[in-house]
Amino acid sequence: MPANTTVDPEDIAELIGRCKLATSVSEFHGSLVGYISAGGSFPGDSVLDALKFEPDPAPTADEQAMLTRLRHQTETWLADTDLSFMPWVPDDEAPLRERVEGLADWTRGFLGGFGLGGSAEVVTGLSSDAREILRDMATIASTDAEFDDDAESDEVSLTELEEYVRVGALTLHAETAQRQHPADGDTLH
Image 1: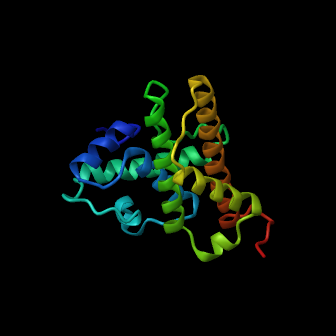
Image 2: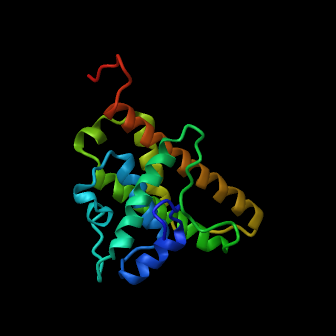
Image 3: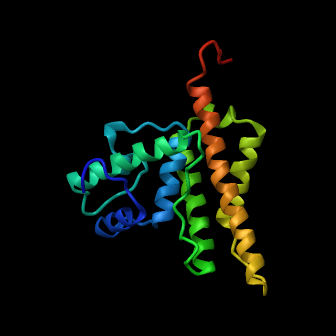
């Protein structure tokens, strides 16, 4: 894979399978986004080490480079003022139950990554809105889906939850980034 190629979910699915990682693509992506959003650093530049994944076998040099590209790609998407960031969850063509499980996996990963990447100062310094987003994500991550007889209503509800999670991740990233890198003239207290 060329060094400037965008990493996509299929690439990560192959890595997860080959390296026998105990995760899904959605959970992996959520973990990375949560870790970055909390301000986590990447010691040794290893995404898998930072996220506490234990590959067996270890990723190849090309796979390590792909993970580094994914990290930078994700950082760029999260900082994009056009809000183009999207969680990696199953697409609209997948069965509803699979999409709901994918969103739950993504939020579980996000919460785990946020916990790994953040410090006590990050968590205690969060606004009440940010803390509410984390509580809501925890509810989404731990809820068993119940479906109505009205599939269209379920689709609408899932779309609303996906958008809430997407905007919530962007909000948390922006809040922690602002505190870590205040604008010129701003002072942290």
